[in-house]
Image (cartoon, rainbow, N blue to C red; front, side, top):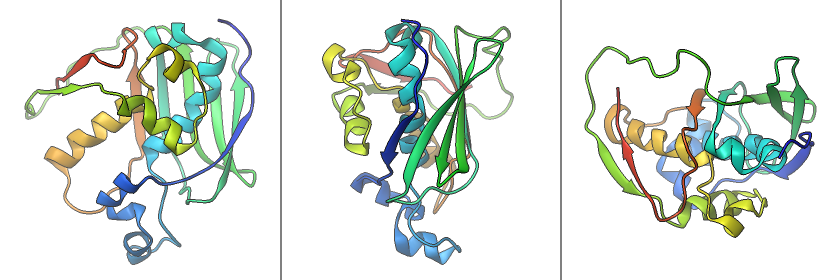
Length: 202
């Protein structure tokens, strides 16, 4: 599928499971200076990727790359406009705007860039096996992404990868409130509900 990406809008929301990170509760966010609960970065990721998957379809889920940057808070109840901006190199930047103000951006392109896969130095964390169950479709739907491709075809929503990476952070690296600021994700093949996923931390 090679259709042009289209603007898509949604009202941002938090899900009950996000309360484990206090930044996604009013009390926790206000304690560190925000006006109210911040919407999870994984949810904003789900919104940003909607125009890309709508336009590029399953091919991008099987072989695509994206970089997501969270630049300013999004609060529950904010209306987010996801505005795609094509670039000359074939990539598309999707801008998450609230009342015309940029809050987050995703740059997506087809395929994997050269040089991907370099190892990092440092302590190796334990590998982890996790089933990719129906929740990886249902998460995005509950958050407001109404694209039918996932439920119709059984694909795992790409926001699942940032969510799984966040689980690594929570399990091994952070204690207390924290903020997701940036992710880079490379799709090596399409993931289907019912598969099992190994997390290998380099």
